[in-house]
Length: 313
Image (cartoon, rainbow, N blue to C red; front, side, top):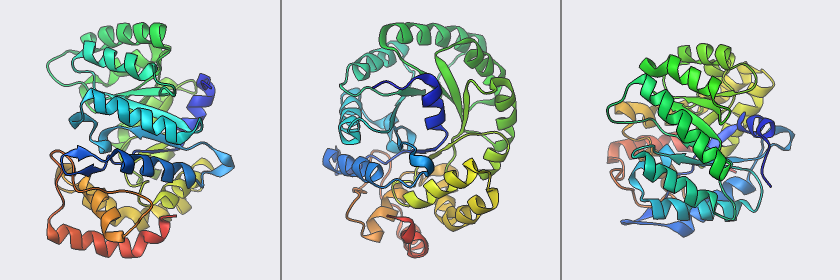
């Protein structure tokens, strides 16, 4: 059953779990992916019975996975969600006709995504061109497939035009902030209550929440789901002190993920799963462009996980 937009916006004010795509050698471990989605759906301590939100996006290596595999990943996720939760699909908008074809295929699934996250645009473009092209793109895909969009904000130059895009298009329901906390207030003030501003740089999200962000994306939700859920629960009741206490626990793992310009964003999550011996989720052997972490980093992750593995259900 399709969520209406107000219900979708409230549902996104949550943890948006981005389970890594596990690989077995050069091939995607689709059975492991199914296990990861099932784990997140089965283990949910969000307050007030709120739905789990699952996204196949950046931490999932979506930039390195072909469209056929992306469709299969979303199809499996939808099946394992069994009609529950909120499903998000990230779409890389380069080239745009291919992105439109991907949306067409995803929209035709038995369980289509509830919302599409447009990843940062690459290549040469100007802000007016971004506005004009994405306005038309959203209109076309909303008309043909009922698509609703979030924009992933990463380039400060484009801020004013992105705000205008989200204000003017009924099909853009909000933005994911991938820069700094100071960028939250301008979006929150401009988009008011009929859109959503999501923090997009991990579970250390309380400073952004205090500035007006609602919900956050999490690449470590698959490892420490209880921590991610409780951070969001505390933020929703505005108990920011409690949220920061949990953030302090998981910060050492996030520090590793974000070191060296996010070199271990994916592989540190994989290592955390593998070194902890969890059998209800799959870490895999390393994905494209993301091999296992060096031995020294692996030892650091093992040490960190000894302190926080109790956050894994």
